[in-house]
Length: 521
Image 1 (tube, rainbow, N blue to C red):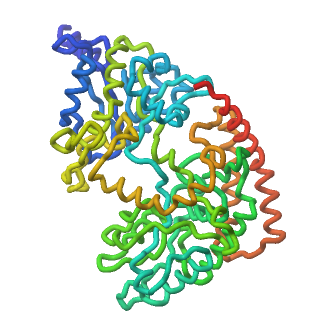
Image 2: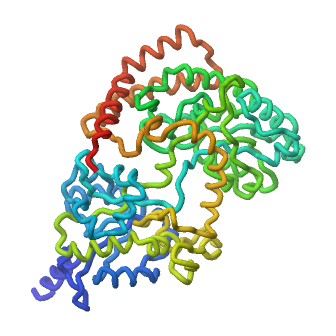
């Protein structure tokens, strides 16, 4: 009996609430973190963890869940209602809307001045995690640098070797790609160049690195990293529209058909596995093999990264004004994530937790969470300037701290030195400065904070599944040139996608775009 009681006590201790106390009589706060890689070092190895415990006057009991196991564990936790005191990179605003387990943090903002400063400088971040009434049950993260991860990346070494200028129109780009195909720009004497490689057309929409990024050349603002653009919806001057039946879309398909027919894109590109696309970009050990692709930065091309630069948006036609071309409005999706910190509702030690949260969102600890401890991995050169040690990036298989799994933010005044990812992104983004200036974010693009409610989301998803199942095979045929019927076949296609709910989808997003204009934040 004594043994049984001891066992029960042990179980109760493991599953108990935050009223527990550590050996030093400080409250024990249970914090769950979802890791994105098994290569991250155990969190207890970070010195900033001790600082955090000092700030919150508590003992932290960490629970690490790997990303590949989180979906199953998340479902179990939400089903049981036994959520941790604090969850990092675990639950999103949709979870909070469906399950009443999370604290509304809006009334506590004055007690978290670092979070309040984050929202003051980044109102989009606050709006993306707030519901219509302004309730705030999940905090976002603000990454070290913003901007889209979508870029035209072209092999500048090949351009220079062949004496070619950077193309400024679709026709000029075709001429460049033809030279890439026929003039052996990688110099190995083999016909192994892939002038232009594109990702497959998936059945789940037009997502990262989609070939439809080319719509920017026609004046349609894309958002390949998130939102309803991925399902055929875009915004122009505050009006929600669809691009799946637009003349711009037809123009883009016809251009791609020219490229496929000329052998400038691999004939199997639209069905190739995603891993093959990534592998093709890195070329061989000796030479680069891809001339042009959509990618996030030169690092996507492996050891040949130094050959690639971002290509400014080419105009669809030479007669277009330079002010008519635009580029991908995924910047907020690159800068913010909406699922980085949630607090258990009515937690017994809310005051300690608020101190913990505020400390996590301090600039200094945000740097340590993302990169590693100061001073062993990061040098604090001044209050707002930090230099990242080469050690942080010396071994690609070792991640010292939380990285993008963190709960924090980087103020605009904060200067980070030595992060090659920031340098590469800023350099790539510079190529699109003029194109970004040709439209208004959140007026000519869907604001990151606009979302459908659960009922409308189900309607939209049901419509969208039918639309994409019907449309994708036809789009592939038009795109690769195996079909050139833009008469009756096109009209039938337009009629059918509208019958399947495309126009209803437009109305749903317009409804919520307008509702969020009145969001109480």
